[in-house]
Image (cartoon, rainbow, N blue to C red; front, side, top):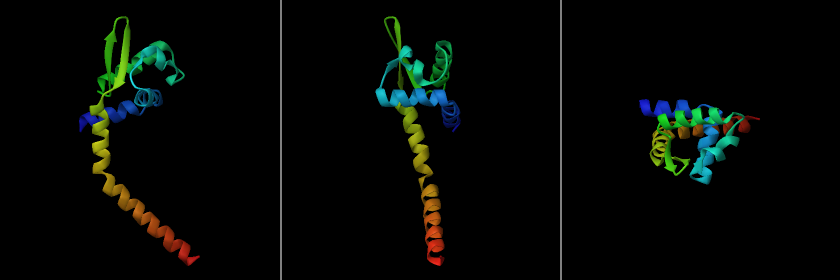
Length: 108
């Protein structure tokens, strides 16, 4: 479970979340293409990429002079598995809310 908490902690930063969103949407990208992921400098983007790599969310591939980044499918699977294990809780909560709203509207 510590891997999952590390993943969520890394994704808790808006710039890192935006980087991962971009990589999920557009696929593998060089670091320079990720500079507009947040209002930060190139060195700050590098630090964010390092945090994401250390958390196991992204991987880096070297192609000549460029470093290319992509999302690790295992990280997405880990998040998906956790979400699915808690799906029953959320669905039950939403069902109870729906019932309460229906009962409220019937009274008015």
